[in-house]
View 1 (tube, rainbow, N blue to C red):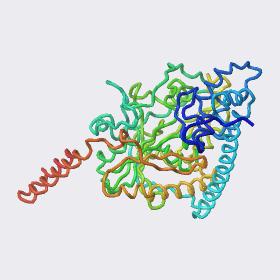
View 2: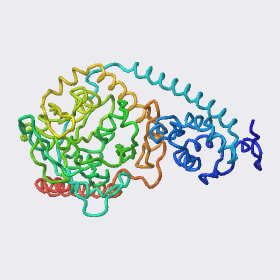
View 3: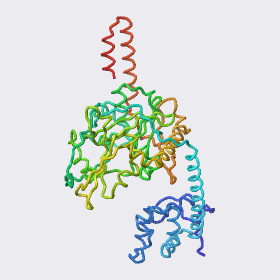
View 4: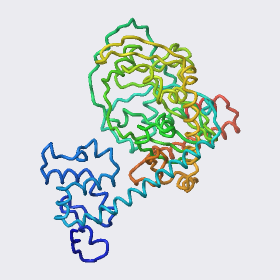
Length: 473
């Protein structure tokens, strides 16, 4: 057995050095040391030091495999590899002790994860099944001008409320669907890696402008969200890897979604299919959105969703169209997130574009009514509704949110664990969700309205009241 290195201070510090010789990182506990060994920086440094050939390179040293393995499992693999084991002995790590701790901790975490997963499934099963778990109370269309004239902002930096309102044009319908003869070549769009930043990404803050434009008061909405929030609650694998930030203004929470993917390809085949099947947008950075006021359980949500097209511009909210494309068939386009997406954005039908293998051509287009898609996936849609209802209530009744109940306070960070259950904690102080000037704007509007009402009471100028209230928003 390798002799444990001697460290001043004794105790468990004898099984690892106070600072990793490879990474210069300070190590304070056995568990932290194990997690450090499994970190990407440490593994890269180990690989650099060992200089193993491709034949001798262990699987866990590849970046993909390292991301797929749990941290403690990766630490065990690293400590069991002969060359890596000898290296860590020379660096002052007592590998046998660290391996034992990592194995025990991994086994304990597995047991806890299984128990938590089983508890979550049991709790979900106790929620009454209901196909109509999301109930629409109103929808409002708008377009969004995402042109950036200055420096773009991170999504966790809140813009001014007037900038939000200026970019949001109310009652603008998305482009009309157009008929296409297939097979049809996809238009060649400029492939551009677009950063998901403000103002290109409107976020759920779009709902603030929609509320003001349509005279919806804050006490009529419990939380402003985007469709991604509902997908995360429903257990979608991609969205549960994302982070959400919540902040309160009066009685209303706003939840900003920060995707794990920081960029997207604006020249993808999916965007090309949308360009083929609908009329031209109002500009290169213009998007079309619908804000839906819905009830889920006891909660009122205003969900902001991007929409693709419509069949009738004169009554677009009742004739919205979702456009999907894939070379993998209908299961890819109609399954997964699609039923929940249709329930959130209120699209009446979905157009499915079948692509060829190299995604340069639409070979066939099929159209389905949204209600038929939901009926086809009835069982999974009901289960997702149970999950959304349970987790939404857990979030809204969490002690961290309750502690912020009287006014807008500290921002809350929402993430999801390996069981896709919500985990809430206080966010860093540099994160902002609501516009910082919203308080003064709302107070100013309220004072103006009170002054106008007093003028009406004294003079009886009802036409002045009407005109001024409209101007005040």
